[in-house]
Length: 366
Ligand SMILES: *Cc1c(COP(=O)(O)O)cnc(C)c1O
Image (cartoon, rainbow, N blue to C red; front, side, top):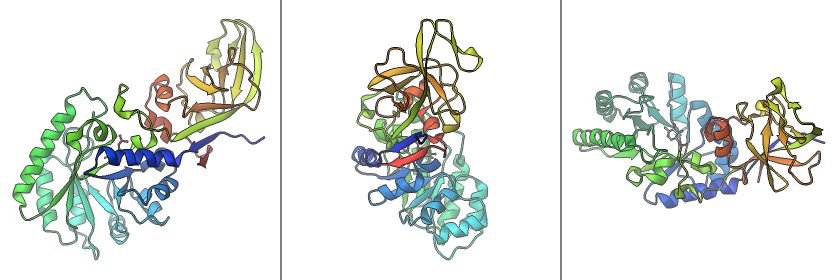
């Protein structure tokens, strides 16, 4: 019996979710964000499945972009963190990669490295998140210099990133937009003969903040079909989950009242119980901090996690589950158990769980 701890990736659902982004933003181009191994779903597999539909792909780092180019992906590829050395810049230009300038060092590198082939550039404003991006003054200066730089392609993309778009009642996104548009207007006044493109929206902004839809949006998490808002919202309901994480029962036992399960006796039976041991653990990416009571799904019923998550195993209480046998398949998250619900039980977010599914877990593409 093979271990059968698997992540089934429903590529059709990723495409469905991408097309939904297009429907929600009919006047924008949507860059499918597939950084971090496409949020755990498989970088090249997802890119190949979306390549005929996607206006472009977005990755975090240079290596991810080159992995796509080396796997015959010819779409636009935006590197969200840009490049950090002359070598990377030259290779990026040769491979027609689209770079981000988010600090003054990257700006200097670009201005002082003549390129034979012009390069597409996004320049990032820190509009309030205070993570990456230039301040207003440096942003305006940088654009002035880049407008004079012959190896920077028209049209430059002016971009920024929201800190709090997943919270629809928070005013911070409105403030960030006001800052962004104020600076963009200044840039346009100072460079009247130049054309620019604009980019702001991530997934929650794409669905919930129509004023933020500009030339290019950058949807990530919504492509993978999990919730995008902090509190459930009808706008996210059509999204289809793209990963089904499953493992098999490999042990089954009856225990008495007051018997404990797992390391450090973290869970004590309050009644005679039937406990199933499932072949998945934190080394596979099941969250170690998942609490007693985290739901799993088997034989069309919901059971719950009991005891500590081990490296390679978890235990579940199947006392009330009908017809349980060794070899039965347990859904850890997927169609029946939303990954965001598991995340809540582990005090984290779906992004962390999806990106954390380890290499040991076999991806099955459907
Ligand atoms: C990751 C990322 C995105 C996508 O965000 P989601 O919340 O997953 O939609 C967009 N823009 C930038 C700059 C990012 O880093």
